[in-house]
Image 1 (cartoon, rainbow, N blue to C red):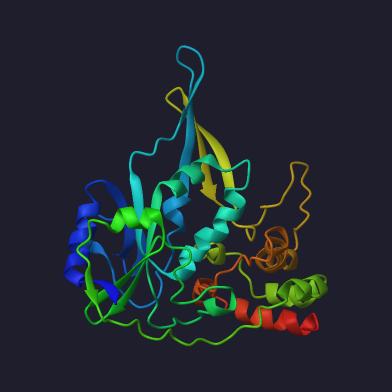
Image 2: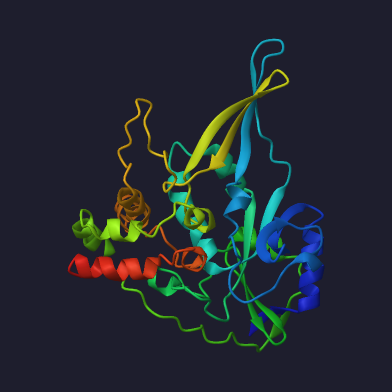
Length: 329
């Protein structure tokens, strides 16, 4: 037997969560689907596949104040406050895996305290994928369209509503007030998707590191940075101080290793000044450096967003295949 919640009861439960939580969910914004704080369960955009941009921004905002320094009556540092616990609703398994990947560098001691507090006070309620979207290849990067492993609660759509799988104690506390019913409903089989040869990619990347292949790929790149911004695991950032009304605000904003000047040093030297080196860095970080540092975990979840959004059709799946050929895989 399975535990099932009807679609109407799901809306009621979400609305009840809003009384005590900030709830982020996929919402339609000017023709695209983004994760936003909602005011009503009716604002949730249910659609096949993942959102245009994932929920990374809910825990790692595009731009946010880390703390404010006040000079009145001496110097005091006021950290940014978090008022309520949060729920991220409707994320797909690849984005939950994205947070698990994000955790490795962000929670490694000394942990990023801003991210840590938000991560600990946020529950993840995901929805299994019924279809594979264009560019998706999560089964090749250690995940799967129905993988509940990185979620607190997993919902799987069935005719009666959604099968509910509680994965953690945090999820149990969250779902305990939901009107669940026992049912004989069975989850549909997972969608099939093409396999990408990502196994042993670290060895292949090492061999292909100095190949001119990266210059050929970079000839197409415009450094628009969209691949970094839509990626659920990219965490490059810039920090700046802004003075306003006698206070100084330390602001952290997203940045990209593809951006011109990202690696430029104070003396003017840029160790990755060439386009080929910048493009290689993006793929090397996900397929070489990250798994070397974190026990073989790839820095890519196979969500397919960079494949769909790149204006010049640079495709990480093709890059993986090419690197395997160059590296003798």
